[in-house]
Amino acid sequence: MEVKNVVVLGAGLMGVGLAQVFAGAEDIQVTVRSRKVHDEPYAPIIKNLDLLIANDALTEAAKEGVLSRISFTDDLAAAVKDADFIIECVPEVMEIKQDTFAELEPLTQDDTIYATNTSVMSPTEIALKCKHPERVVGTHFWNPPFLIPLVEIVKAEKTDNEVVEITMDLLRKVGKKPVKCQKDVPGFIANRLQHAIWREALSMVENGIADPATVDEALKYGPGLRWPHLGIFENADMTGLDLALNIHTYIFPYLESAKAPSKLLKEHVEKGELGFKTGKGYQTWTQEQIDHSNQSLREYLIRVTKDLK
Image (cartoon, rainbow, N blue to C red):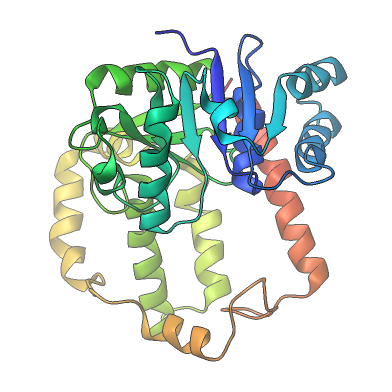
């Protein structure tokens, strides 16, 4: 099966970002279905594309090509009638996701693939109301989706193997780095790794080992600097598994193993200190610092991902 028509359900930041990703392929047409089409639906996509142009990662001609392959509609039946691949970006509420896919089945072709862009919810559970759960697959994109290469392909309990392979091929075609999660487990792959590090980082702060800014510095200018090039298992093989065993034997008893969220995190949330959205979280942020952090992250990702292509 060759995917030519992609439908994105939802026109939020992730939805329009995914539309931009798929429209990067010259032979794919993308329809974004939104319950209410805004007056300027292309505005966030144009902003993303202009950022790429400003950093010499895209041409004006390519920008116009991407925009020409994206359309918006509020008509669900018309949008999905000829879809080969549908990806939902609806709210992270299980019942909404389940009902969305169940509603699609009578409206689509027999071989249409249903992808869910959930970051933590079980694709197996999302497919429970479907008559054909074998067509449902997890596709966890990372934000911002037009810059982060990783997409986790999650095989639900009843997902057909061909559906997984078609999805993997499609994502490679549009320039992504898909990885296969062979079991439908909470957090999939990358979030499990990320939050294991977060748990240890919070434990260090709570126990007075280092403050939040120091922990961030240690990650950014130490192991985090090499992770884009050197993965954990390759690193272990490089340094020697005998050394890894000796280190793990010594240090594992001292690592955080809490099964509940950090007390420090709970305290900040209870105080309404939510991070960038309130100007204070683990650290205090001015609007200028917030804008700089968001902008510099995107520019950094553009530079890094240029080398991956």
